[in-house]
Length: 128
Image (tube, rainbow, N blue to C red; front, side, top):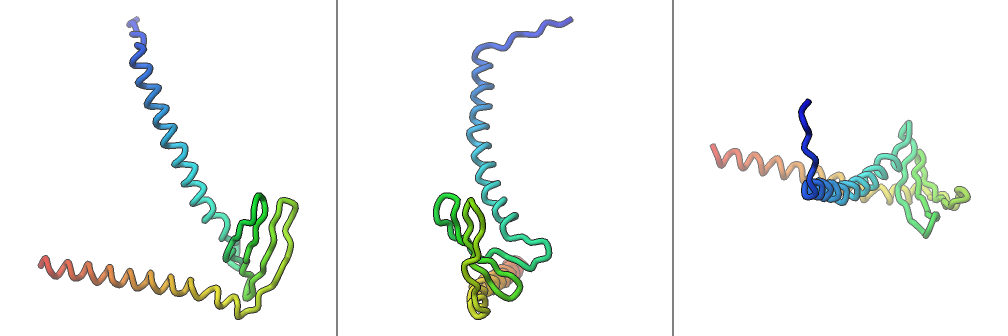
């Protein structure tokens, strides 16, 4: 059988420092990535697409207000550790006003895509 050299103290410290550095970098990165993406994937999804969380207002530890779009209307719900309470039903006009900024964002994104395509065409014509 061949002999295995024992790991030296400096080698052991080198490996330990690499593992520690990886933990210090990877664990917080995973935490913040999962916190950011997990919230987006879970909160605004419904099975049939009839409900959507429009806005969340944290009020303190374990307390928040939720503005939820349900079919054509919107509900304001108070959420605590003890339960959920119905607070207010928004009139349809208020729901439409809440949707307008999203339409603007969508139109701005479409405009940006168009400008990017136009710039790429410009760059292609300059080269040829």
